[in-house]
Amino acid sequence: MDGKIVATGITFDDVLLMPRYSAVVPAEVDVSTRLTRGISLKIPIVSSPMDTVTESEMAIALAQEGGLGVIHKNLSIDRQADEVDKVKRSANGIIMDPVTLPPSATVARAREVMDQYNISGVPITADGRRLVGIITRRDLRFLESGETPIAEIMTKSGLVTATGNVSLDEAEKILMANKVEKLLLVDAGGVLTGLITIKDIDMMKRFPNACKDRQGRLRVGAAVGVFDYDRAASLIAKGVDMLVVDSAHGHSSNVIETVAAIKKRWEIEVVAGNVATREGCRDLIKAQPPHPYQQGQRRGGALAHGAQPDAARDTGLPLAPFAGARGVGDEILAGRRHRDVGQLARVHDGIRARPGDGAHADARITRHLEGAETQPLVDRHALHSRPAGRAALAGCGA
Image 1 (cartoon, rainbow, N blue to C red):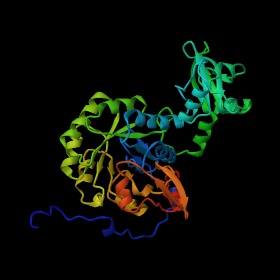
Image 2: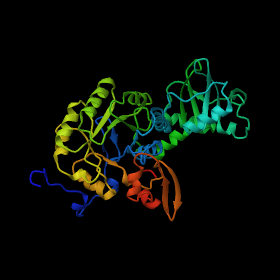
Image 3: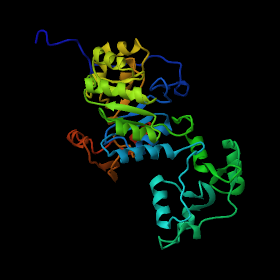
Image 4: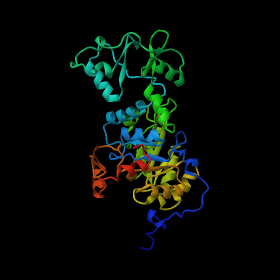
């Protein structure tokens, strides 16, 4: 074994944090951090881009609590882009590009759009987005025929609209006074320019720490593979906030070339990895990603040695270890090793927002999962999650 051991390493089970006297109460603690130089989080948690962990539902739940979800890439380009779009449309301050339908669309099409975007109403526009009406689920509730044109049943008169710059407080007063849920924004010519909903206003009050972009939409990341530029372009077109060049071995020429090409083509936040050495970290930094890298390996690598943290600190980059944390306690240990945010997979076991159909049995949630990451999950007997109560304590918006 002489010459084959390059360093002395430790893992989570080798470390114990001893409690000490404190005059600080939990309500006074600030756990906000940086994910990238351009994205800040209220809680230092990012979900792993695995098909057993993160799709739109998990990403929405995490962003509402102040973290961020990364949509996995084991989907077609269109499906992954749709998952990103669901997150971006799930909460808004002012919706600048609301989904619309023409008067000639059918009731069946209206129901399909409402189900697709999880919305309760759709503005109806004609002749270059000129507002002519609105249709809601209430209008569709007792209709049996799906072929009825929207023009025959939509609300055409008495539409609640506003022009000019409208604050959310002003919008709430207008909505409450008129007892409606949607405020349609139009210009002087009656052209639809935006939409404000009471649901979004309520959500802002319920989730004051939500991770949002400049337009008030929830933030979301998405994974791409090497040389997967068509996927990257499609995700960016949907408003993704961050791309993760996801590879089991990030210290490779393909990953480095992909990172450099993405940074050259688009102004987008980039996370790259996994890397487990100081050299791997530095080579990714040279590829011009002024953003964090995924550090460590899936089993116990976060505390392997100090090379990666030191290399990142030299450039001021955030550090995002992906190290197989098995619970909140392991995450605290990783935090002591100078990292900015934790990328978690197993900690999310049992969260209702995970992909897959859920069923309750003996106070546990069982999920039917399919995908590339499913077999390792079965192998470690983790299909039966922790009880729902404990899942909620994990702080992921269950």
